[in-house]
Amino acid sequence: MSTEQKILRYCIEPKTTVDIADYCGLEKISIYTQLAKLQRNNKIEKRGDGRRGSPCVYVTIRQAPTVTESSDNYENLVVKHAHNPFGLRL
Image (cartoon, rainbow, N blue to C red; front, side):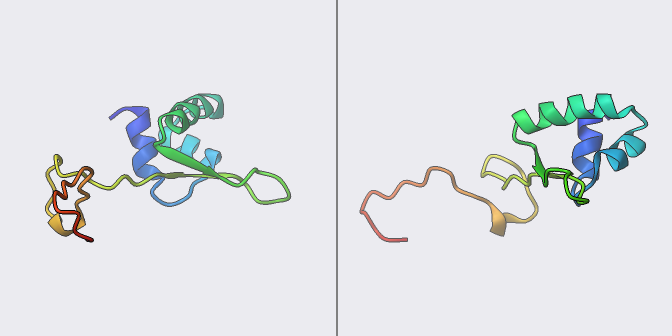
């Protein structure tokens, strides 16, 4: 499993950089690099600014499954481009 995958699975609940570094067994500078990459790709979100005694935390951004993905929970699928030829209000 790659470091990015470890981070994404671990950060389902908000985690600090120290927590993430300990979990992955890496130095904090390496974690910052991975977190920046994940933020650019909109896979993880930074909450807080790390000032005034409240540390910033990172949490995985949950993406809704699309109709092309296989899922056991079909009720939560998102239709991205629905066709409505008669202009019906849905």
